Amino acid sequence: MSEVLNHFLKYVSYDTESKEDVEKFPSTESQRVLAEVLAEELRAMHAQDVRVDQNSYVYATIPATMDKKVPVIGFIAHMDTAPAYSGANVHPQIVKQYDGGDILMNQETGLTMKAADFPDLLKYKGQDIVTTDGTTLLGADDKAGVAEIMTMAEYLLAHPEIPHGTIRIGFTPDEEVGHGADLFDVAGFAADAAYTVDGGGLGELEYENFNAASAKVDIHGSSIHPGSSKGKMRNAILMAMEFQNMLPVFENPMYTEGYEGFFHLDSMRGTVEEAHLDYIIRDFDEKKFAEKKEFITRVAAYLNDRYGKGTVNLELKESYRNMKEIIEPNIYLIDIAKAAMEEIGIEPIVTPIRGGTDGARLSYMGLPCPNLCTGGYNFHGKYEFIPVQSMEKVVELLLKIVEKFAER
Image (tube, rainbow, N blue to C red; front, side, top):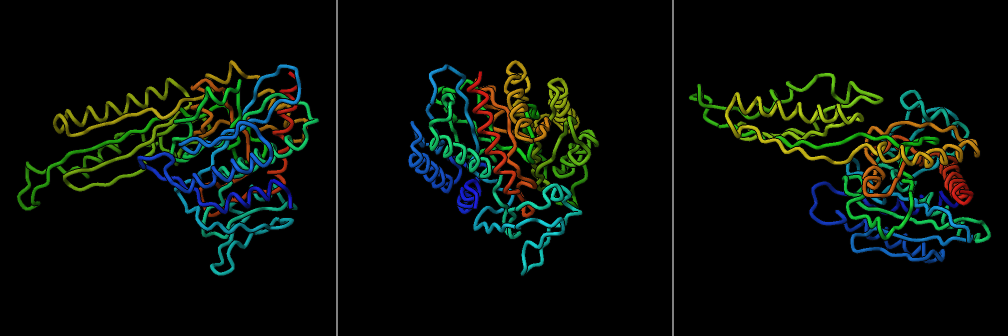
């Protein structure tokens, strides 16, 4: 069994699901457990400056093996798994030499991953594929990234004859709930640049992401017995529906792709008296992003004019910005990653992230940080899978990037 697979299977056995709207950091104590495990492994490898801070961020250094001064490079991944699907009691299974057909994931329930539904599977015919048993997610997002970085570190620390500069390692909690970069010690990390290892299929290389905001809408109605409510009742649920119907119909995730942005109604709840809408707003283009924020603000203002001041309360909050603005002046990071991929037989797929990454926020915190693939697919659900050979190839990619930085 390969080293990266050994690491991966160990890490997915830890339930590190993060939680939304929790007032502590990290949001779940189970993340602290894996943080300590990783730190102990790094110490056993003889990494330097290994520490777990009070917020369960893990930091370590692979010391330089050459006198030549080269940029200090970092590699970062997150330890938590998404709250969208259970990450407890993960039972991974390995499909050896996948034959290109459907994969029976669970004998008891008959759950099957069909190649027709997931055509990416066919790219990996003949390879070994790790799946779930269908009762949980797998956790490749981002324990594959953690395993790949740890395997790279283990190899470099066991081979001090390999010339390289100083390398920093960082593992973060709570990325899946939007807080992975909140308390990251950029100054203490002391890297010139870094890569998050948190992407999808082999070859993905990303330095553009959505500009992102959240919008919380509270609508205040007036509940009166329907038998005597004429001219008196103000139904907050109906006003909430009116709010949603005023947003552009086709600027909705179900109609968008590529560089197209959207308004996404993430949750809706309410009564006649009170209704609440939670949105996320996304766009790659800064001007269009600003227009979306201005549009939803005008919708709230219009309904307040119509139904009375204070009927609609809109709380608009920016989450992160497109890191393209930071990475383009540091495009050598992309050039190095592309060249490294090509040299080891990976086709680079430069693609925008239709989501967020710790790297976006870290870039604006002073640490330019594009995103590398992990090799995984179908994150956050029961059909998640990752080819073993892709994880091995990502380890090779990380080592090649280290080599290229040593040549600078």
